[in-house]
Image 1 (cartoon, each protein chain N blue to C red):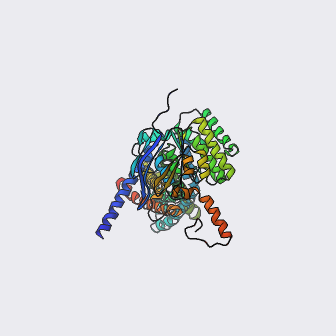
Image 2 (image 1 turned 90 degrees about the vertical axis):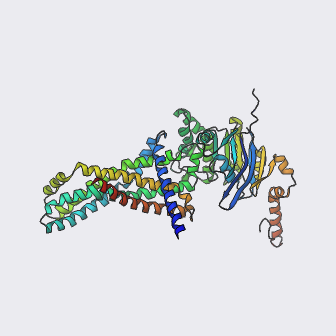
Length: 271
Length: 258
């Protein structure tokens, strides 16, 4: 059995992105080893989705570089980008389903447009993907006829149907109830075991991120403030990380104090 | 003021270049675009079949008015028998290609801008890119090719129904004999005029649909507006620019071919 490649599947160095005067990503350097799950967490508006889009080649960084399987990735290199996209999938925060296509057609789209699979194989894969995500009865419906949760699952089916090597998830459980959230993360775990893809997951769901990922990056003020294992993240005494990590408990304390009659403090979780 | 004028000029040149590159890429991406036929059929349906009732109604009333005005004007010169050639030449050379294009822009073109703008805003176009699907080949090429099919057909329908409208005015509502009307129409129709009409239709179709696609595809780049407002602004801009482009192109083509 050959040794796994030491080259990380995805890596960035000194990545920067700004919108006008606003610097969203100041200096991002990270590596995603092959076969691992990297969770990117942070407060809302810290640029997690922007980072993911830079990694996917949807946004052009203003500086720095992105490497996929050791090769530099740039929007100016069409061949490298095309090769990358054949091996990578992206799950958008808003699902980005094509609303003029049915559920079946949405899932079949990447297979029909970018692979040479025969129709019978495409049919099998699409049916299997829809069945795994409990959408087999909704194959003929359009995205607008599905609930938010069903749309999320449909987008997930489309992202996984091509059996990619790398999957970029932008808030994969947003809008889902707790049961479905668990189901989606379980499905991601099963799919990883079956197909062995590498994943980068941007999520607000800290408990699930800690449970599902191998490595965690905490984004704050445009930089990776923390990078390490979930165990290190749980135990670190870094004040910025601790404030984010323990925010659920501090929020519960603040709400309990308010109910007991204490005044609302400026800068509190509710203020 | 000079600086502002200079910047505005540079902006117009840059936009024109961007539009030209976009259109060229749209046509070029048709080559190798998978399952283009299915999307082409859908585009022909949306641009053509759905707009047919409007084309027929406007064509009919255009012919009716032409017949009415033409008869009363020609009668003063004892030339009422020339109503057929008047209606036919006016329709075929000018009114059919221009008015059909304007109607298509208003109905299909505006819908096209809105659809692409919404797809841009909801990241559907980004999703195509991340799946390795060229958005130009998937979204733009079928629409451009459909325009080359639809615009000449709608122009022909417009002209035909307009001729019927002229006959209704001149021979049913007014006393010009039908045989005189139709025989003079047949004699006056020249293949060169039909060729000119079809050339105009092709140019108008490519130009207007390209303008509408360009505005919808780039709705997110509008400065000063975002979201639904950007889509709305793009739609208005596309319809206005397309309408002006039709009239300007009509003059240019007529001056070259006449």
